[in-house]
Length: 301
Image 1 (cartoon, rainbow, N blue to C red):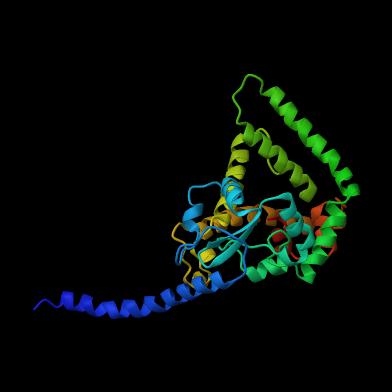
Image 2: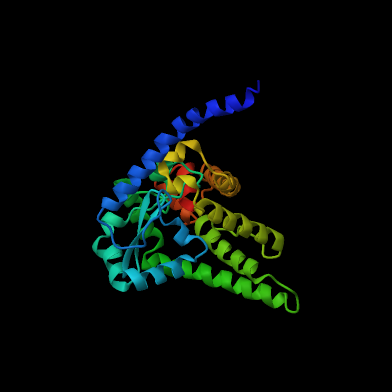
């Protein structure tokens, strides 16, 4: 007697038992979504919602096309998540000004290689809600880096880096250049001088500039690419990431943190010596306000 088919048949109830709760949950989520008072939008498919409407379409084109049919405020269901879009000046005012306090929280993609609790404690740009600690950090940043006085002081750095780029281009006359790497080096060195008072990439080391551009671009791409948990949050514990987006983004982040971390340690050693130099940059500002090395790394990210 062939027992293999009998064994396979016995597995079916087990698989059904495992899948049934998930299917019931998804169906209940779908019904719950329909009952919510949301702006109009295309009819969602069962379980997966409006994901098929999004595949293969550029976001700005998708929103523009939907706005023509459903108006300036519309909604989509991405898996079990409800997403609301605004696509007019009036809708933007309502979202960004009138109701900014309720809508100012940020969604951190699940491929981001940082725990949400750490984002809340340490990050400014990636924080998932506007808690009091985040507001205090924002006030510090605004006064130190984004006030008119601060921007005027940074103008000299921007002008100097621009002149260095022009000089580099003049010296390379007649040669083949990758302009995006040259522009990236200029921008990165500008930020490097604002944060660390030094260039982070040598203009003449084109490979270094290209490598850093690839690392940062890959990090942004991998960390913001949706994975299964972005559409179905209840599956987050299963770590379903078939393309390894989180692993790739963490690898890039570790490389960036390695370089920035060395610069932070070097500055702390300098501050501990007898000849302390006041650079007046990001590091001096953060250290003077008692931020830890980990906080500074997340602030730079």
